[in-house]
Image (cartoon, rainbow, N blue to C red; front, side, top):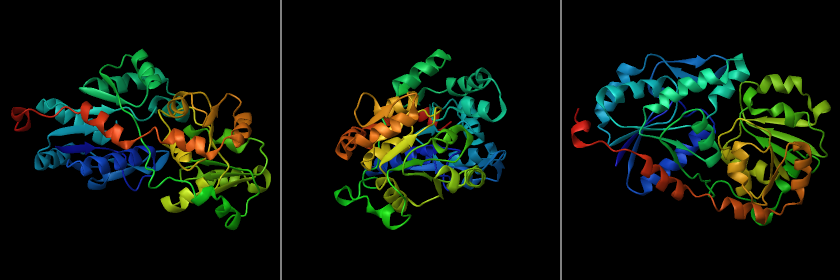
Length: 349
């Protein structure tokens, strides 16, 4: 099958959506499928207001039509609800091409955090966007129930995975890497993700914990947080962006992973921590419930500070066992079932 993936989120962005599709594409191509990614890299763009790392494509519809005509895809998947996503949706509807979508991010909650817009307004817009799709992919039952309550239809579950060739413990669970580099007192509590309003990092940074706190990742609030939360007072070290190889060493060398976000549909970084043998402390919300479930690889509690202390007792082997239950092969199986290939007549239209 020749698949076209239209996404507003792609390199050089660093986020779960990008990693999700890169891992998925790797599996699909191994199976003999071809995937053409159409992203903002091929369009004139402007920085997203309040989030300049994200590029918004300007008036992409005409060029997108030409690209789709050149590709002659067997199926189209629209990954995001940005300018490219809306343009792809309009083209598919005009040509009566079936397409699938995926609900990756709780944008209504993100937007509410930034400007106070009622979530019901945003959910109405997203319901319209996804309502035209043959299938809208979701990553877990809790998210499915949430969207169902907002009136979303044609929802389909897809299992998620983690690349255990990249995310893995240090040899013999050795954690000395951080002892030799940053030389931080232990225990080391790590949080990895975009430094942005919706990630609720403030809760982690302001927690009083023994040892050290480490925040890994880039984001629009990175420099502001470095100034607002000096290490001398908050005992929190910000690394900024790290390439995968170095980032994995940092995570695998930590003693606990703390995930304070309440707006994640899944939260890949939790799964990546487990694959590194690091237990997860999280709030009992949608994303952590999907990753941790009823396993013993982490603790979900409204008292996140106590959960962070309690997970220090969890053995790395327990974390690895949980991570092994998530396979990109399974995720690819589910994804392919959700696609709606064109008929010959539709493809030539």
